[in-house]
Length: 128
Image (cartoon, rainbow, N blue to C red; front, top):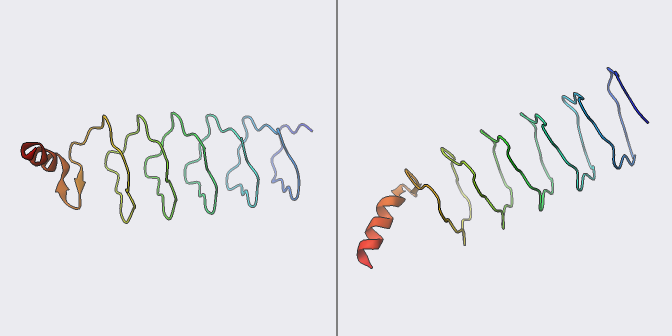
């Protein structure tokens, strides 16, 4: 089925719309509830002010995107991989960082529990 130039809401319930394509459409205030979206692809999509709750984004890939001001609350990101990511000005509170590894990172101004990491590293290096 092909829909073109439609200007009214569509309600789909208990439907299988596998391999559907939405190109050049506006879906403001659209709602996806109890939806299976495995292997779905979003390219050049403006999802600002979107809300995701009770979702499973396991093995999802976010590439070349803008996420300034995004909030992650009560989210399990164990095993997540960050590469070439700008976290400048980010705040991490009440989080488990057990086993986190930082490599080749700009740590300028990074503080852990109020301690400037560059100072702590310098003191450590002098002691060994």
